[in-house]
Image (tube, rainbow, N blue to C red; front, side, top):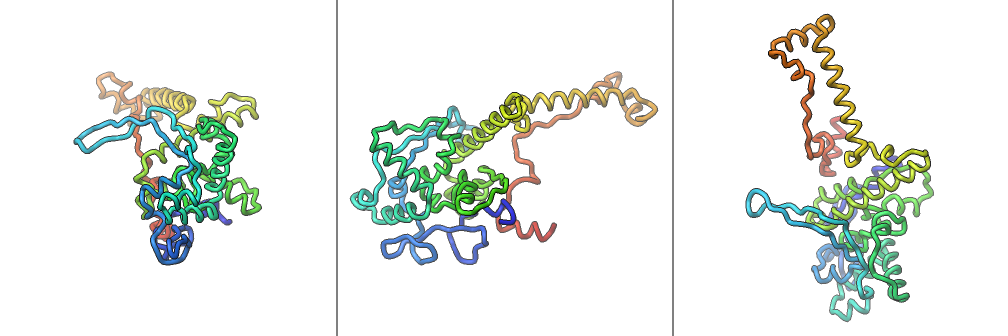
Length: 320
């Protein structure tokens, strides 16, 4: 592994002439799902078949907010995401009994090729056997290390193999390769690559991106608290690099106040800043108007950092 970025995967329905980082879905033929064969793709399963394969049900508390035209609206998150195991265990005979041979074939493939799906299937079976509660606590859902890759159990059709995972990429890699290198992979970057791919299904999912963002934030702040305890400082000190932290905006406020102080002193410095000194003299005494900076707050992603479709990366690299 030369670069950590090589661990990110980009889904592609058509497996012909794909780049090395692209992965595709298995296809159904002669009662089995296999890679590199002709047939219907697993992502083309019906809604009923795809729902029958779900092990963990995801629920997000959302509120619909309209704006502009009658067809314009946003989903506003009003609570933490919740998840729970299904009441019945997903089994191959059970899928056949429901008249879903394709779903049964997909189940066999998932159990063999997606270790996270198989892991949560065993956890589900154990909970049912022991009569445990099917609900998953917020701590386990967002932070606990044993629940990495849980999105594979929530949306198995979107994650047919372990390599598709967003939250378990690095763990799956370390389980297969003896590599102790400190690597950082971002859930958001992995998900964004999928949304920008040619597969529309990722962008059409409503609850999944909310959950992945919550899991990212929970992991980030939990790691900050752990690191803060190791260094003997408060948690806000370690989280100051995040705009969601109060410490971040305290630093910004101090920086802007220092900027105003420096600029104001320059407005009265005729010797070193004659142009600025003469300019503010025409402000009818409102010297402070030139001391305060113009601050623009935006919620958009920085244009130069905005992700691009994977097939344009080669052109960007050749230009640079």
